[in-house]
Amino acid sequence: LSIAAPWIAGLTPYVPGKPVAELERELGIQDSVKLASNENPLGPGSRARAAINRVLAELGRYPDGGGYELRRALGERHGVSPTAITVGNGSNDVLDLVARVFLQPGVESVFSEHAFAVYPIATQSVGATARIAKARDYGHDLDAISDLVTDKTRVVWIANPNNPTGTWLSATALKSFIGALPPTCIVVVDEAYTEYVSEPDFPDATHWIETFPNLIVTRTFSKAHGLAALRIGYGISDPKVADLLNRIRQPFNVNALAQAAAIAAISDREHVRASVELNRAGMKQMTAGFERLGLGYIPSVGNFVCVDLGCPAGPINDALLKRGVIVRPVGNYGLPNHLRISIGTEDENARCLAALEAVLAA
Ligand code: PMP
View 1 (tube, rainbow, N blue to C red):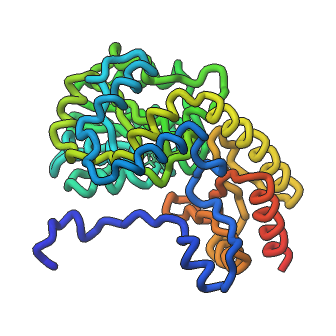
View 2: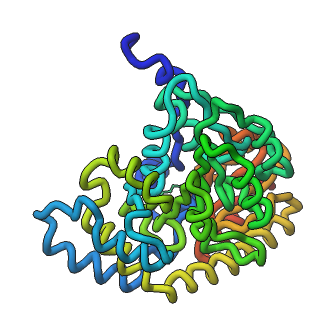
């Protein structure tokens, strides 16, 4: 094993929520509640489901390796050329492509404390060095990030809104930050949760790709579109950058079910609207529940919220698991006293709050 690249040995792997099957087998139950991965409790919309069913008849064929129809549909949706699009097996795949194209040993990436866990992994997997800026009020501090940008910086990772904190950056702040970066530095604006945000000065950074040739915006169908299991996301950038990403993209990285479902999902605005609506009501329900229990939380514009337990979250998480409730401890994100809870259906939220109440009272 000593022959492994030295930067791999020190890499901390991504830890997803406990698998439902594992917990249910351990507890001998079949009705666990999983609010651990910021999924859409409604799942796919009816148009995406119909598209998936149609493709089931053609599974013997490879998918379109270049995602022709999907990139066309995405180009139309965002008002950009299909050549600006890079499709990924989830947006994580696009983040990984960015790291493989722009990072290598001897150069650096910069991101904030409490940022998405894939940024350090993507950085370290190619032997580059991660520089981590201090957060401000749990969110990205753009000044602190700027301070860490040097002539060695090749990638800055920004999630807007951020996971796991649910904090967000305004258009004004983000645009001037990007404008001040050196052209030798790529900036990734990860908009995985963008559909959930309704704040007035919240940006759609896809509108800026013609202004900033060093900007890559990533989006996903895993959240508001409810297609997490199919693994489909994409990047939007200057076509020259997309060309580099596409050179190393695995052919057929996005399967046929995912491509067809995503094309159908793009036009299903009603499903996104219903999903966002459900999330808004669920967020109110959750935060009202936390307040009733005397718990603080980080105000979130995403489909998840970090509750502050005021003590180490590990034992409380274990006790919730025993009650069949799977949420996400975020100690690995530098938040040891918080649990991140995804917003579910009204019933799932109520069961989660009831379990939390019982565990805290025990
Ligand atoms: N970015 C952020 C900020 C996320 O929270 C996630 C999902 N947890 C992703 C990207 C990746 O999502 P996917 O690979 O499912 O598109």
